[in-house]
Length: 100
Image 1: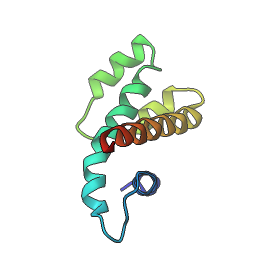
Image 2 (image 1 turned 45 degrees about the vertical axis):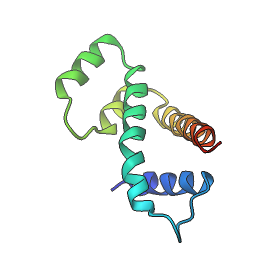
Image 3 (image 1 turned 180 degrees about the vertical axis):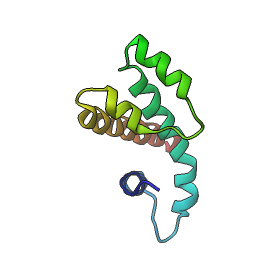
Image 4 (image 1 turned 180 degrees about the horizontal axis):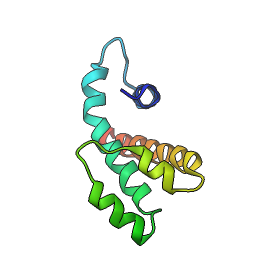
């Protein structure tokens, strides 16, 4: 389990107006996690060159791993942080639209 990702998902749910005392955060996070991970993976993939993409496609496994991207992408931590924030903004915006 990625502790930082768990905290990020908790924070996002609170920002969306969910209450940890009343709402099932575990179930909500289980719904959110694959969407977040796919978003992160697809956007990190865009930073790879053609050769790196071919290499990644060969190793593609069920459980994606950030280490491959970390080794290949310069400024990885900043890019990853930005992707998390972009996803959160998009999630909250979509959540607001759905609740109106």
